[in-house]
Length: 231
Image (cartoon, rainbow, N blue to C red; front, side, top):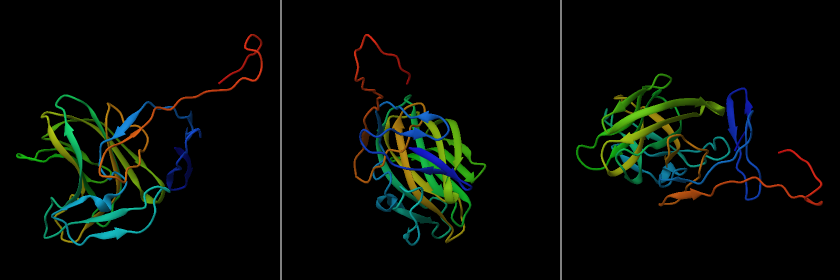
């Protein structure tokens, strides 16, 4: 749940079963069932390294939930250096909502992609200077782009990808740089079968994770033919 703000931006707090969740400034949060397809979505230290430099853990816990961050470092001026995690087989023509949590690191640039795992290895997502990322649509259309500034410099970028081929994909996050040693801090990622993103679904496993639908109920302790109330 999104529970409050500081001068630096938004904060997160997790909820337990039978505990209401709230979206800051909007009231109680009710969501349908959703699945995070990104394996190890909130454990990017377990993502694969593609062409990257030294793997260095980011040791600060961000937003109260991201405690397994890692630096994705450019190695040998290879712009394709990144951290990647499988999201399974995506279907052509179906919308997938992508969310990525990250910090600019030393590069100030990002490449946030869904990437095909076989030739021609096309991508669909965002790239460029953080603050003015632009779509890259070789593997499908990219729509509904949004960015949120959160506490301690964390950025949440969201977008919707509709792939143009049915095949396996990975979520790929790296610095859009050709300068050896520059980096971006990867905190987490989420991919959902949906036309808009939902709230964070933590995942520290090598499989997808599903959040059950939420519901709102109220108990009445007096006769049902003699009451009034408001929710």
